[in-house]
Length: 198
Image 1 (tube, rainbow, N blue to C red):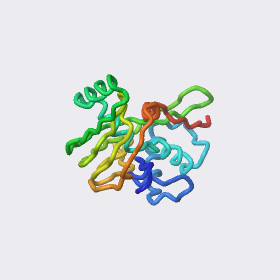
Image 2: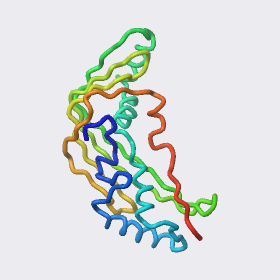
Image 3: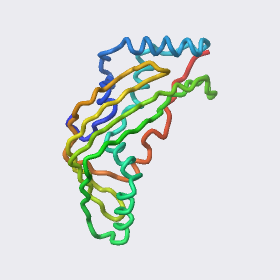
Image 4: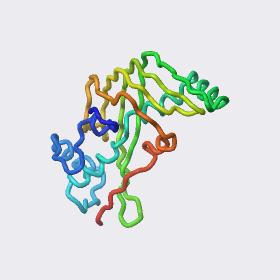
């Protein structure tokens, strides 16, 4: 995981597009659980195709998740507000060692025609331990992040069933990440949709 786009898909070892899933049994349990909940749904595609759609939900870059959490911190908000007053000045903010805990609820909506039939909501719990990170701030925005050590653990669940898990261990992030503020706003804001047959 050393490229620019380290994602949740990689953290949870979910298969990349076109790749074989190293744990295909997890989708069998998932399908059985969903089938018990909604007995009238007939999947129009094989479960691997539905699983591929689910995996797309996790193509979220880790630095974007960090940014969302950092923007809620009072000290960083103050630094961003101050940098707006002097938009030509560049400031570097070294972050203390810290932990980011977050929970997300991405979902897929199963539809018959345009009518939603079932919302399949996942629970993603994440813990990041970060050390040695530095932010470049200019004109009220975080422009760059210099990375340090990142340890991560997490769990992906559906209805109490664990589909993927990451034990606390270090991951390799790129040494420098650049941001465009408009890109970060779309993390986990749009659901995926899977059509169902009746």
